[in-house]
Amino acid sequence: MKKEKNKLEYRKLERIVKGFANHRRLQVLELLSKEPELSVQEISERLKSEFKNISAHINKMAIAGLVMKRSDSKSVRHKLTNRGNVILKFVRMLE
Image (cartoon, rainbow, N blue to C red):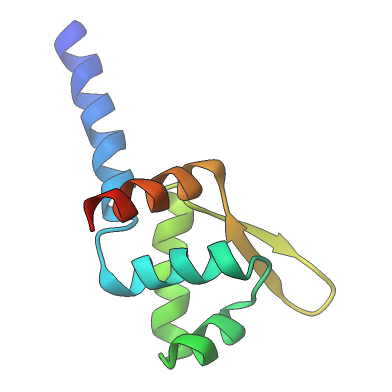
């Protein structure tokens, strides 16, 4: 039973790591730390990357609990979660 619990915890950690294990996702984390509440369109414009790619990256980051989505009347806005902020600090320590 204990072994199974550890396996689930490792899978959860794996999902979190995969949420930021990409240069573009790290750029999104950095951007959202400076400019929260951006739409996918605004993020893709600022990072000069395709909308479709940024959207896919943000979805993986949301699944990992790094980014929070909020709907306003016109679009979906994104900002870092507490976990996203902690991960960004962790990554900066690795530099």
